[in-house]
Amino acid sequence: MIHKISSMVLELILNLILNQVPQFDYSADEIQEFNRMYDAAIRDNKTIDYDCEFPKYRFIQYIMSNHNLLIREAIHEEIEIVHAIMIEAFTEYIGILHPPSGALSETVESLQSKIGSKGGAIIAFKDSKAVGATIYYYQENYMYIGRVSVLPTFRGKGIGREMIYYLEQQAVKMGYAETRVE
Image (cartoon, rainbow, N blue to C red; front, side, top):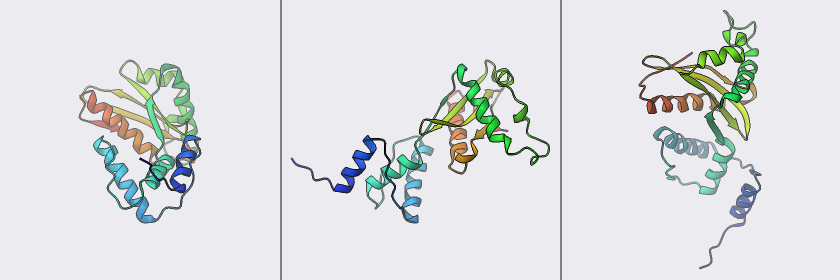
């Protein structure tokens, strides 16, 4: 059986294989529909049900260019990366926040002390670049989430929201029904 593939789909596949994500112009309706499907899948922790009128290849490209975010636990040796992201993220608030944020007085050692054996840190990667981080630890009956940090050039893309969602899911898996964000 011979399958016919349009030249546009073939070009998209080749570009994706070569890690070159082509740019499309999306209508407001497409963006709204694509985000609805993506958010439903993330919220419900399931696969994406493709149920819209727009071509699937455009949806795949949109997700590749807008939602290629990896969030994972930071290993012990990466606490310096967590600290660097936090400092860069909060530096612009010097002289703006009153009282000033305590994030800028944190050190690698103070973060390790806060986390201790009851918590950890996560790092968000966008296109293999560390762009966000946060720490967390468990209290008696809730998970504390603090120092939610996203590099300034990556703000407004939902990265902070995704990190908090990731930790909320972790809290549920650990049997905690409540999270508190600082």
